[in-house]
Image (cartoon, rainbow, N blue to C red; front, side, top):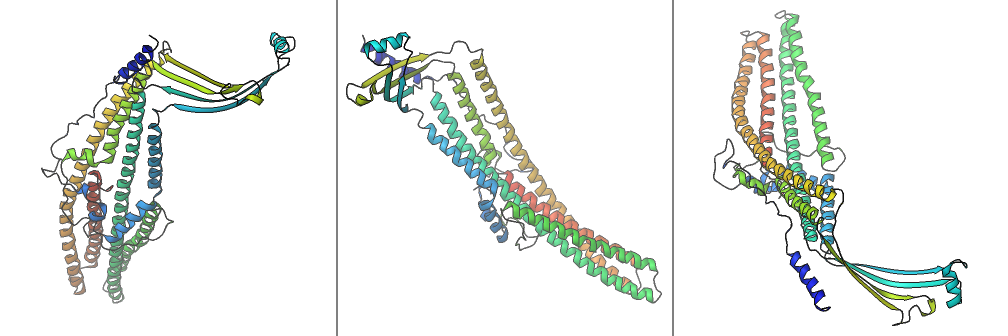
Length: 469
């Protein structure tokens, strides 16, 4: 009977180890449309799968993105978080092994001469004190009956994968932010060129008016209004130069260097991406968007937490074994086998009453798990909304741009006509000044529209999950 009992205990442990005390919630299938709003395609290909180095056309921009990813401090922090999570995975793999502790101790105890211990020592050992020397190794192991360790490992793995997705989120945001900032600089360069060109045009008009004023053909009012128009263009130049310097500083700090000028080439009117802007289908966001993937991993972590909380309410089996050498004299401390000792103990602990703490923790873990499911569904919906917004902007800004380009072309033709008529005395100075003002505002607005179009394309790429590959 004594031989059967250990095997019966082991069989019971293995039997309960196969039990699943907490049912996991699977990642829900979010209810999303087959296509994006303003998009109608069954093609599963998406620009999100294009590496950022092949997506962007501008070589200077690609170099800037590359250096930013390498030196950005948020990216470096994300890499450290990933390394820390990897260490937790390695540690969790050792949870099934027993814990071992080595201890060496020595003690001398001198009881009172008038105490029972003191009298006993004097009578039997002829000593007033007792020594105790010990070296022992203690092994303790808890059986994973209810899957607590398994859930801890699952949680550690999901945590590591989540740090990986977090790193991807940071990179996609960095790629998009740097690209938007770069095209903002190109827009400011274009607007600065427009302001300088308009300033030269105003100089020419003002020069003609001065000659006419000296000849008595126009009043001083004409000179004053022409000078005011010239100052409008002149005022834009330091304002745009200030915005250029600030944007360069922002991009420099983002790339982990001290503020400096940003090397750039090309024009704001160059396309961001030379290929087709294919979006794929909404369901692809579950694989392409790292932030959505991170929310899905939160469900795995929540399942593990629920399993751990549930397991804490059930009995735990622990086995402890201690062995070593012990002696009351230092001279024969290491006398083997006389000084050897072994102690083995096994016990089952069942929580009975802890003021409802364990039950409350389990119920809270269930609530948290439901919240992660809601957050996951919300993240998918938010991602689909971002793509739809970007698609609307790309399409409508393209229409605006065509109209604005036509308007600027007419205004540029009009200023040529106004100058020619003014030189021949067939138009007054107000018509020339108005034409110059309209051209200035029209060209500035066209450059801004082009920047917004570029930003919309970049945002479409980011919202589809592009940039982390």
